[in-house]
Length: 175
Image 1 (tube, rainbow, N blue to C red):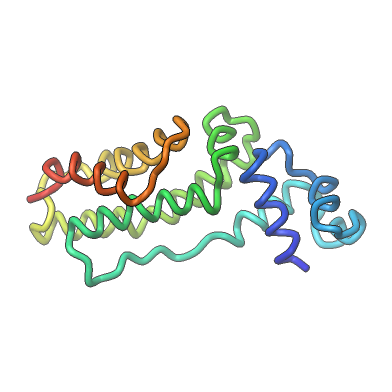
Image 2 (cartoon, rainbow, N blue to C red; image 1 turned 120 degrees about the vertical axis):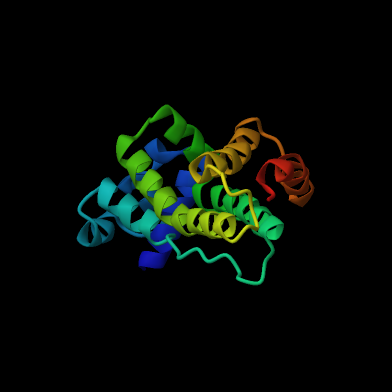
């Protein structure tokens, strides 16, 4: 039951943004009675919190990747997460801070999911695989920002785009 409710809430979130997610809209789209939803979740916020939390995963960059391949992986992971989990509608709503509760949930999820990525960049800089003076926080902002900017502009972020971004940025990252 929860999986169906979460999938429905996340689908509405991705396609129409956080303000469109309500117990009523989830009930209508999922076919689950509002009373059943309210027995499980006190309100819209608790349902959204549970749905968004259900998407949180531990991010692990494959250890076998080179420094350049790990940057490519980060770009692909960011793209896939935004497209498949967050969605363009939610991205726009977060930028506009339309729903502060959802904004804080998603920012927390982003902070948690990028922690291993930042650690990987730091380790690679210390190991000499990336430039020693790499500003890891700025690097993360640039990598994630490139994905967000393309999605806001409505452009494709396919693998060719990932390769083009990496070709542009790699000289600034390499040791």
